[in-house]
Image (cartoon, rainbow, N blue to C red; front, top):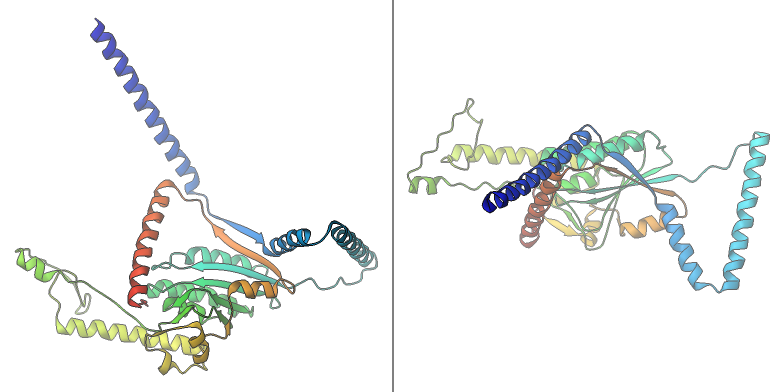
Length: 349
């Protein structure tokens, strides 16, 4: 009898635990379904306000109490006078003084497949709804390159800004190589940190081949295609000289397109000299004409803080649990590949 009682108690606990787990799974699934139809949203940050707050905090600590009170008094007086002028202008119909031009700040930290282009598209579309030719778009760009079609689309997104006659500045603090430089060269002006890695105008493809290993273990690999060059090289089949030649020919064609693209946007470049696949540090890149100024993004923004209203635009999406795990795995893979590239000084196109 005691055994049945203990067994019943154990069964009740087990059922309760299973029900709790199922309830949690249903809640997560329900939340995911609700968020599934939701798009991301724009995050707009007033960087000018942040700069002003930092300045005020430092000033507060540097000035004596009497000096700080005097400064506050002067600031309030100036604000009142400006309010009177605005009120008078409203009554008399006079034109108000022109407001400061805006500088829109966008960040692009590119991965191998340039999946960040989806957010870039949204950010640029938002900016173009309000930006004027007197404004400026400032892109903080970091990328060692990746897939050609992904970075080609990202470059086209930046070109939309140029097509609307809005000044575009690309800033590189660490690296803009290969596909990253393809994006940067679209800008009216490129600023680079002295030791940032710039260039790598070339194309690379690496394909492992396991055919000998398969043969050694008596494993047949069959591949069926329609079209002579539907598949030029393969990972598991036996590659032919003709297939290799065609593959290299396709790489050369891509390289020509890349060089033409860079030449179109930076015609003063000696493209034959810089399109060898090499990369340079910022100081060397400036001498070659790959960048226009040596400056960090922080210096550039601080210099503009007094003459422009700085606004950061970011398109953010809420990610589900599966997406977060996928993102973490992707970042880990990108980090490993980037480390290999840095150690071997290789940047794919």
